[in-house]
Image 1 (tube, rainbow, N blue to C red):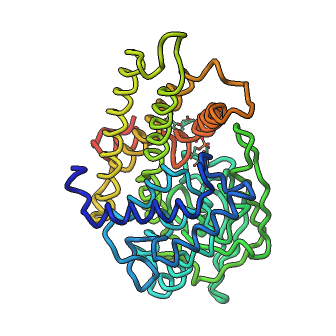
Image 2 (spheres, protein in one colour):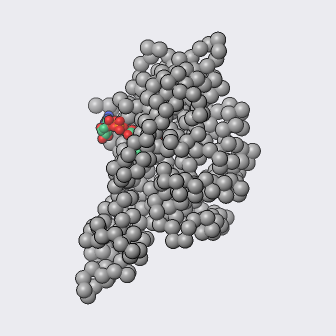
Image 3 (tube, protein in one colour):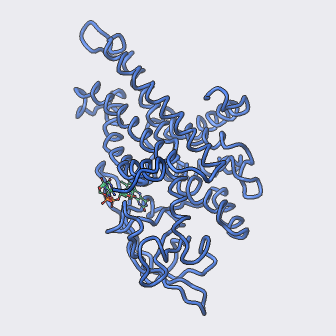
Length: 395
Ligand SMILES: Cc1cc2nc3c(=O)[nH]c(=O)nc-3n(C[C@H](O)[C@H](O)[C@H](O)COP(=O)(O)OP(=O)(O)OC[C@H]3O[C@@H](n4cnc5c(N)ncnc54)[C@H](O)[C@@H]3O)c2cc1C
């Protein structure tokens, strides 16, 4: 499948993208992209603008919105390569989530405005779904979005939480309860808003790796016009779920895992297991790496399939969930094995660049605890596969 899926033109694109990243990323860049850090953020903005000039922010979107007008394989290559290079500047909230959602459900005005703005490389988006008491059970959200027929505005009041990059974002997509007294998935509206609106307070939250990657967002009497509603008023649930399938069909975890495995192999060729044996020459090491590589390839194929299928069909129920589980699990397995190899070096940070690798893998592994939680936990994905995919009854 891999050989037939990508064309000659795709490989040329990958090469050109890598050359551009060679120019834009600092030499020997080997840090996980962390746009909460000021340097990464500056770099992210620069990279986005450079991608925009080439119409590469969203290579598969129509040209009229600043996209590249190319096949979906280009979008896969872009995300996978940027993840492998650990490059900042891939706003997944924009290009993977709200963009494809607008392409599918937006009015022509919304498409023109929102998509063109994304491909300009000048905006950062964030996702306002989770609330203090609504995570896995998204249908229980309580943030109010009261609609006023006369002024055709929605007034939003509530708290969103775990909102990644809300402290950097200028736009948010949000799910609100617009029909007073409505229950569960009924009476919800999906909308977009400007983070500069009056009434929005963003409070950063420190994560397990010591970074302020997510936030609490307090919305107090935030007014948005009805033009910001995506789809119909009170009918946002289906759109919100569809967006989650776009979100779960991500290739990034595969890119990060592959980079970690490749770097571990390079490290194993330069470092010894015992006085007489290089790590790379150990039979156990070779076997473990071979198994990880095989698992990684199968997760990659599943992810390609999910992205491709979602791009051509609406009849997709379990592939995004399957790829999300496989990709996040293999990423953690690869990092776990790297830590097993590096464990004696942990804690010794000095000028030796080899130790930067140790610290990087440790930091990444701590951060990647989140892979099984974000975008809907892996337990929830298994429920989706069982119930929506395979038709098993709900217990
Ligand atoms: C790094 C990170 C970034 C995030 N970024 C964002 C963001 O930008 N925007 C946003 O809106 N949200 C974001 N989230 C929040 C994320 O979507 C939620 O954490 C996730 O949906 C789980 O919700 P919860 O944390 O409330 O856990 P809970 O829903 O309370 O779940 C707790 C545990 O119970 C299990 N569980 C719950 N219900 C079931 C069930 N029915 N069957 C089986 N097991 C179940 C879960 O699997 C989990 O193990 C982010 C989370 C993380 C970790």
